[in-house]
Image: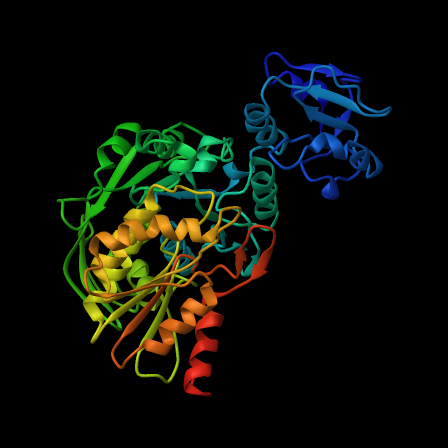
Length: 498
C-alpha cells in the first residue's frame, strides 16, 4: 500500500488534486477490475477514453485516478494524480508500487522479429528439467507453472505485466521466460523489470507501420540489451546474440555485460555444424566451451536450428548443464502453430505456421523445399492496418519459392481485403511465371481449394495465423482456426480419414 503523495514524488511535474494521504491498494486501467482502494488509470486511445469510466471506478471503490488532464475535477471522494506523460509515469509508478516483483525471480527476455515464441518454449522446457518452477509470457499464452492463461498482446502493458509478476512471485515461480516485442520496448511496458538474460534472434522487416524505418526498429530492439546491462539486485547478466544476423554488431554494442554469441555461418561461442534437416526432424552438433553436443531432434528446419542455439546459449548463461540441455531439446516436440503438421491419413502433408513476415515466409517455404517430394502449395495473406510495404515482398517470395500460390485474407481488420490482395499480387506477378496462382478472398475457401488440388507428395503451407483461433474483420472478430479449417477440408474431400 502506498499513498498518492509517495507516488507523486516519483515523477517531476506532478500535482495532486485532493488528498495526498489517500491510500492506494492497487493500480488498474480496466474499470471492471477496480476494487476498494484502487488507483484507476485514465488511459486514452483511438477508440476509448478511460475518463468516461471514472464514475464506474468510483462505484467499485476507487479512491484515486491517474490522469494527464490538469483541469480535471474528480468526483467527491476521489483524488487525482496529474502527470505530464502517462506512459512515462506508469513506467516508473507501477513497478515501484508493486515492489519490483521481477527482482525475486530470474527473468529471461527474448526479442527479435522471428523465433521468439519457439525459443521461449524450448527454454521453458530446459528450465523445468533443471528443476525450476517456470513462468512463460508470450504470443500464444501465459503460463504460471502448469497453469495456462489467455493473453492478448505478445507483451502485456506495464500494469498487467506487473500484476502477472506479482502473481508469479506469490506462486513461487523461480524463472520467467518472456517474449519482448518492439512495441513493448517503445512503450515502456517492460519498465521496472530486472532482466538477467536477454536473447536477440534476428531483425527483418516487420512493424514498419509503427516504427517507420528499420533503423528505428533496430534501435528499439536494442533497448532490451541496455536493460539487461544495468546493475541490479541479481548477479550474472548476459546477452545472447545471433551473430549471423546483420544487426548483431549493433546489439553487441548496446550489451555492456557478459555476451554469448551463437550462429551457423560465423565463428560464434555456440555454433551448429553438420546440420542434417529431414522431414521427421533435424540432426546436428553444437560446439562451445563446454565441448560438443550431438543432437537428434523432433523439430525441423534451419530456422529451428537457430532457435535451439538461442535457447542453448541462454541456458548456458543460466548455468544449466549441457546434459540437461541436450535431454530437454531431444524431448521437445513442437509449439502450437509453428510448422505444425495436421495429422491425417492423406497422401500429402498440411503444415500450419505463424509466418507473417518476409523472412518468416522465406524460412518456412525453404524448409518445406528441403523435405517435399512433389509440389509446395502456399496459402497466405497479409494483415490489414499493418506494414503494407511487406505485402509485395511476401508475394514475390511465395511466388519464387512455391509451386502453387493461393493468396487470401489474413486479418483484414478495417482494410478492404481485395485491396490488400492487389498489393500482394504486385509481387506475385513479378515471379510467378507459368506457375499456378489463384486469388481467393475468403480464407476458408482458399484452404479448401488447396486441399482440393493437392496431389500425393505435396506439402500445403498455410501461413500467417498459426495458433490464432480468430479472424479480425472490418466490423467483427470471428472464430477461425487454420488447423480446424484444414481438418474440415480434408474431411470434405477425403471422408473420415483424418
